[in-house]
Length: 550
Image 1 (cartoon, rainbow, N blue to C red):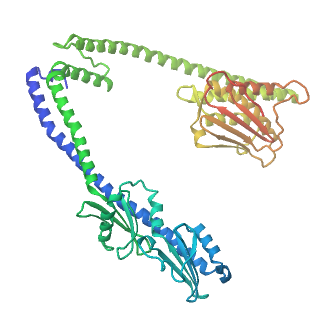
Image 2: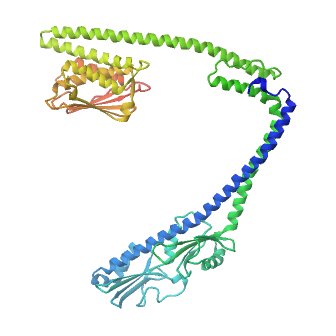
Image 3: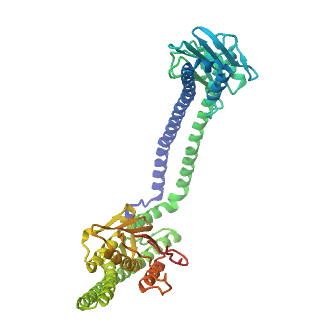
């Protein structure tokens, strides 16, 4: 907002501010209530889902136990009759696989062979011959009987599962502490139940008995209970969950009150502070200063606060300070940009002259090599030429970059390889360079690129010369902050870089490679015909570690 358009009359501004705050109070309060109400609905839906999720979890776990019992009974019907004759051994083996099983009956045709079960003390006892559970009574003794018959052999296996075990095992996996659980049959008869609050057992069992098998998955009873029901897959049994809803309602309404109270208090505080303090003494001046800051921040470097007539001296001093700072920044920015432009020009001129000088040296060495007559003289000049070509390749890649300081690693390797192929008269297809995504994005500064180029100039030419017909030299680059370079393919190379195995001093080539590795804090390992370089792209802080050779 321009300074000229600010209201000059503070009383009028105060009245307008009062009206705006009063108008904003109603929608903000309504918004807070809507947020609280939506939170109430969300919590209610979460409560519904939680009940059903608990019921489904227990139902799925119980259904899996029943399915395991059915599979186990089917497997027993296929056993040799002599094996089934040892009932106690079969019962013990069944208990190891089915902890929920408490009774076992074996029939041959319709003739009972044996019937075993667990007594109240946990010991295996003989049951009266018949189906499991026939000789016991009472809700706590009810069992779920799984029966399977082999029509070919006439063998029938009945396994009795204790409903309470089916129910309790998955309950321990839930975080429920105020919910009742029950396993009921198709007639709504309770086979097993579990309630955390002992005084709720009667009401809970009554609620469970009133649920219908064909009823809704979730309902709220007249007694103030939430009730959820889920069918065990593949069976006629259901899992029923229930909990008192009054506690949840109270908790949710308390949440509503907690959600409403902070925004109301905040609105009252904001109204009082703005009405009697900030707007009258600060806000209209700070708005102008903020507008100037925003213009300056968006690129208008000529924006200034100017004189704040009628403002407090401290606020006026803030505007004057900003104007002085902006003027100094503008002058220094202009000087800095001019200096940077001159520095870039000089840097690129320097790189250009270095590149031209290196190219002239390369031409002179190449001509001298062509005129040389002795093999040793030609070999020495070739080594010199290769080292100069490596330096030139590094500068050429650096000169092609924007700033001339950082070098793309893959471009550097490509340039060095292309430069070194010339003296070796090696066709382009005999060298393959492979990179991953990290290596493609990697950059190295010029001070580290030149030693790396020197190392390649010492490692690659001997391998170029040892390539057999049909062999291809492969250079693999991988990594991001630390590059692993693997050079392989020359099967006849025998390069240890030691040169002192017989006690003779190390060669110049070996000393140079060691020096460059030390400068880069890199490592180089040789194994048969493969060389592996580990090169950090950035200098390691602290004292440089010595390069290691393997």
